[in-house]
Image (cartoon, rainbow, N blue to C red; front, side, top):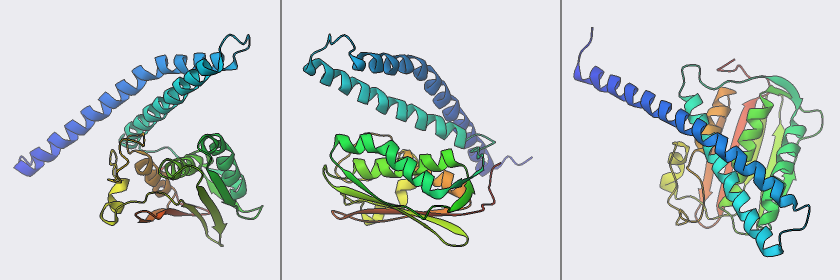
Amino acid sequence: MDDSPLTQQLQELERENDAMRRALAIVSHELKTPLTSIVAFCDLLLRNQKNQLNSREMDQLASICRNAGRLTEIIEDLGQVVVLGSPNGLAITTSRFDAIDLINEAAISMQPVLDLVGQTLVVHPPPAGSMINGDKSRLHQVLENLLTNASKYSSPSSHIDLAAELDDSRLFVQVVDRGIGIPKDEVDKVFDYFYRADTGAGNRVPGLGLGLFITREIVNAHGGNLSIKSEIGRGTTVSFAIPREPELSQQ
């Protein structure tokens, strides 16, 4: 049995990682139930069916609902970290679908978020009939993460591009914003979980810095790759490519 100091340190790190995952799992589980109730009652009150709330109260309620939604996203991201650190890793369920549907559905789901800040999403979809195999739900999560980041780090009234194209073997997707950008020496670090780039907007932009970590893991699980190009003050381009018929790392 190897009792070297290095082995002992590795074992201690594994125990600490296991403890962290268990703690995250417990926290995520305990927060979900009350937050689900808050979101449900927010939705009910926003309907204001008996016109009992005035416009100021409706605005305040909408703010509560938005922040409850942000908390829900954070909890879901924490849950993803637990899954990614488990022995079975990320579960991927494949189906055959048209890539244009994936792109259009992601654009539609993001529209209310973009409308709130007056941003415009310019979509360059692939041609209809561009069939691929993959986990559509997980890939939708990838697009949602990338578009959410693009929106968060861009100014109001700016526009964001979502483009996709295919060749015989791969699907290529690109999200381009004209936002604040990422320092050159920090681009590679943004894939680390809980990492937040030093853009000077840390107090303005919500989140834990988990989105790109989770996004990269999903793309990797599809046998693909993800890359970022960014320039301070000029924006960021995030691109990924996955095989149309991937050999998945997890089934």
